[in-house]
Length: 276
Image 1 (cartoon, one colour):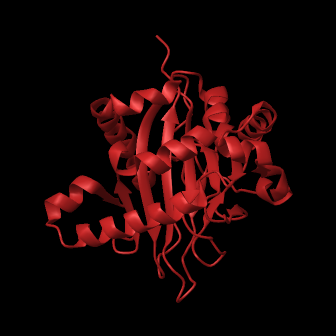
Image 2 (image 1 turned 45 degrees about the vertical axis):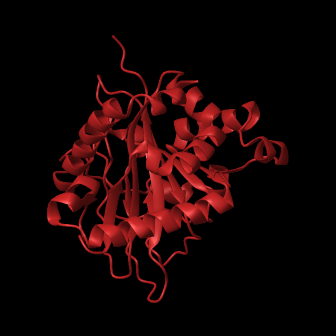
């Protein structure tokens, strides 16, 4: 069970997380010139084909089974994204949101260096905030959602995948839309990396939901690939998760719902073990 490493490899996780975060920031600030065509495919995708509900037996066992796993992995292969409903227990989703809000409040009182150790701000420093976590800070909800998604993640990445990112993103009213970007680039030597975004409250269309350009996870190897319009909104219910190939073009939309809460997503990334 490849997730057992989490309790004993925090140092390795920290180094990998820093490298992964540096790559993501690089792609955000200096998007490759090769990524410049439109996202027309998304309009042809049936959204319901990307959404998967666990069976009552799977929910009771807190583990996705073989049939649902096959369909999720097929969606990741074809579209680059798959949504799994109720991936995180509802009680844990609420508790985790409260934990994240409390950490934000604590960080607001800290000095600049202390905030830097825990946070990476992207595009809008005050209203689009990325916060990093140690495994121990979020162990219970992390183990619940990873346990639920274990079979799809193992099927997609192999039994020895590595945890390389563990964070949350909070987007408040007034945050502008990000531009389209992948979190990693598809090259001859790249490894497969899947990021899982878990909604910690119901996400309505005006709250700046994730927007994806389906099918673009393979474009980096095939030619120019950017998405100025025509993406597919991923609005989630609390506890639902969006699994996304890191090479997929995506963006956070603008939060325009005045009076709505911050959109907080908990997210983590696993990478396939490099060959050689």
